[in-house]
Image 1 (cartoon, rainbow, N blue to C red):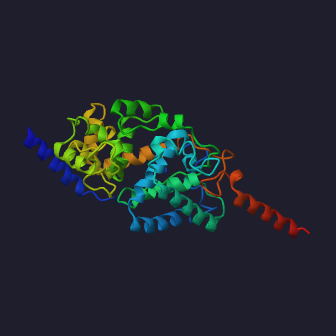
Image 2: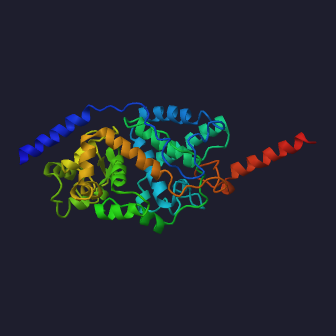
Image 3: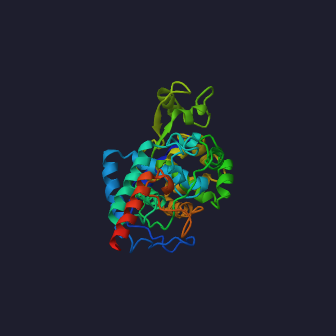
Length: 354
């Protein structure tokens, strides 16, 4: 039985190594909510996606780890009160907002916030204030996938930025913790119209990134999770000798900086880092989906794109809703520099008529 399992896992690894991401996968026949469009900025900012991708290539060349940070930022934004960049908003006193201070968001990378605002600045410098931080974040998430080896795909655009940040209560209620079991994850995501395939596909985002000791040491101490591979557990204990060790390790043991299907191979080898990862292979409702993605990277990519496109439209603000922030961390009415610029523009306009 052991020999058979090893052969199966070996064959999965071989099969997954030979698929290379091909040309952009078409998504513009997928349903999108009213107000979004596949061609939203074709006239107002046709250079938008080129500006973002060109800059992110430079960012990832210096630190590829930022790709996971940007992808996670998009997830945490969309799942709480919709893809409205509420997670980017600072608090009223200029410090972290209630949403940013919520435990699940404390480990969001500070650099990711800076990268989004820098991208927004570059885009606005070229096109004017016509592109929202929410759309910049969505495009950056897509490019984080593509530039680390994943699929390329179109993103529907036209989101506006929210006017309020979420409460800690709402944040905790909508972000699945790393210790959650598959049934709880399925129940949570079903409230947002995601099925089991969507759920497993979105979990595949853990093919890049890192996890903090505090997110998985409950599987090591005081008693080791019997589901976890023993050698893997031993190595994790060396990284996190205590439950409160301040250290990190990769989410995907096999190819931590490449967006591929190896995460699912990890799960089949009982080497998923979080309970929320590994239980997807333990649970009968999701086990076969994990296996199908482990043997077919193209299938995983296709289902991931479908789920990402759906996630990117959660409770979006469009049309006259929300605003287009001049600074991603501030509402326009709280942005003194932006308000001052409006006054200057008004004076200049008035001067033209005098």
